Length: 133
Image 1: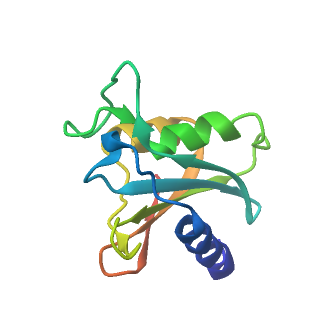
Image 2: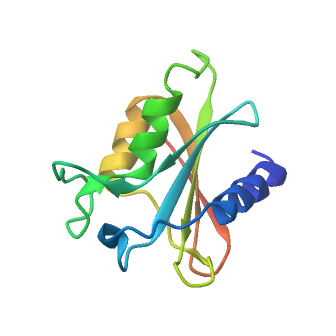
Image 3: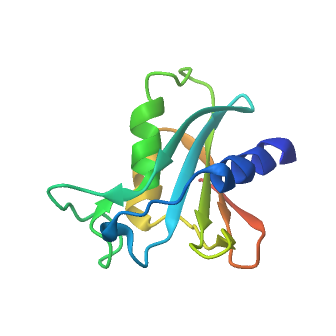
């Protein structure tokens, strides 16, 4: 994946309006980008689920951005071509980058569906990479 795509993902995430609904109080926003052939195919966003569903983190019952992005992109992915995930987490104040490593549930879910690499923002403002096995 090129640095241009990573910078584009950060730029897109920062350009979005942060949710103001009371259910978002104190929550960070996560954006997940599905990338194939150095093109962003889809963007997913974490959000509360109704009725509440629990996946991953116990303190957040809802739809994780990784699952949301994959559901939107699955019909767009080219079979037998590798694809990647970019996770961006923004703090509510200043839209600074924060840690967006995938939870175990999302990681295993996406590996089983062919994801080759995970890129994610860190609290130090960098992008880290997990190469799948």
